[in-house]
Image (cartoon, rainbow over all chains, first blue to last red; front, side, top):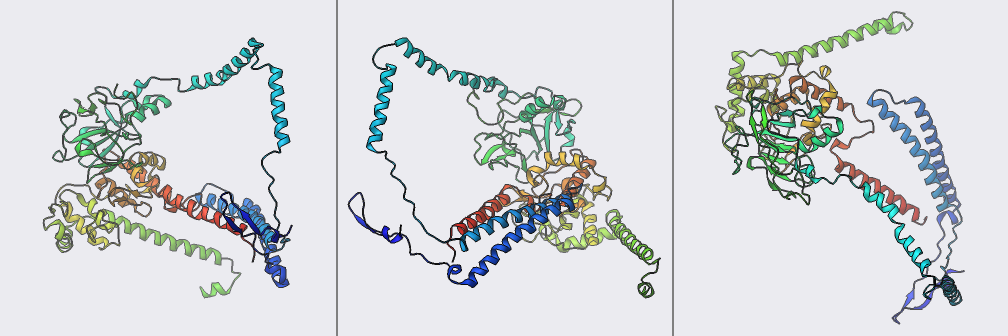
Length: 341
Length: 262
């Protein structure tokens, strides 16, 4: 089939005609007409395959010479040279094969016509005939063998249950959302340092300090429970100059001499909010840049969060340690359907 | 030395060279050690305080005021910031500030070590504040890097990144990279809370804990097993390389495969 035969007039569906541009003229490559160029291309392909051979040798040698040892440096060299060797070995073969095919292999252009998608009329008629014969054999639509038909439909409707019931049954397994509403904090629980769990005295918290806080006793829990409780109970403890602190109405006794404690779980999607800027009193969430003003009730000053961070009411016990007055008065973290119920 | 070099087969020559080399290394190390020890354990004399006050009046008083009480909206009061704050701010070049802006960046240091300790000596007389740590308090060799990692992850990593590569804050402020910071300056920054950074006093993170953090940070400077860390600032740099360079290379090769040979 020659290329020229494809040029000619074609008619579109709306009757407008346009010129079929056909395929561009065959243009011989430089390697086809110039023996020097062909020789050069051959040398390039050989060079690429040789590069691959050298890469293989490098990888094998590197495996024995650069053993990953104790130091970071030895691991880095082992990775670097083994990886470089494997890269050159594979890349050389790939580039060489493509360059070979593009410059030296036969440069014959051809067109393969796609066959028509629609089946012939005879095939279509035969298919309809077969379907009709099948329906007649089964007796569908004639009112015979009602029990048979009922049983097959019933079986097909029920079969998915064998998959659905275990799937749905395994979802969660625990639908008790009230767990979201309470944390480990209770009246009198001491505020302790994360991660070592030692309690914090009010005198330890100087102005400008920030303490990352867990409830005392958290570290005694078994591992899984510890993680669950920690993810809800973590608190940030900050001491501001009492003159800078805007005490929220109804929370007059929730802070102690400029010391305030706020939940560290962002009210947007629950990332730990912990980037505290001492000079601006702003607390920044690293995930979506929600910014809370610690001096003003941890209200949102920027970003997608909708609610202030819940405040943990604190006071000081007889020994001078900071303790919680109670649990948070609202669920911590992001919204959920039953949050305010 | 000439005769040693000429007689190549002299048996004692390698031994002699080794001894000379070892002596030289030991000497240099000893000198370096005494120098650092001097810098940190200098005793403060009355003349230091006097010199410090002169330096302060000439270089710092424009913003902080002659009595270092600060000016509202311009510069904070330096009463009670202690020698550690001066040693950090001036020793890293952050002060004197080049221009007012969201952040005073670290830049080439403007004073000699002696001038800095004189300034620190004078500021320390204004009110009680944290003093400069001793060489032993900041020696990474004595710290526990594993405990340091736990402390760093809880208290520092949210701003400075998981290995201290630094990161962005709000309004043009940022937490700087800790990769080049000296152990002494890391300690002082925790103690004094410069700029946006909160204070981590000795009751919050103990002196041993601070040394553990320094040990962890210094251990990160060995480099990465995977090659370049791209600044260790997280997914932005990695994404830039992955998407622009990695994907660009793949697109380029694909175009080359599909292109006709000339």
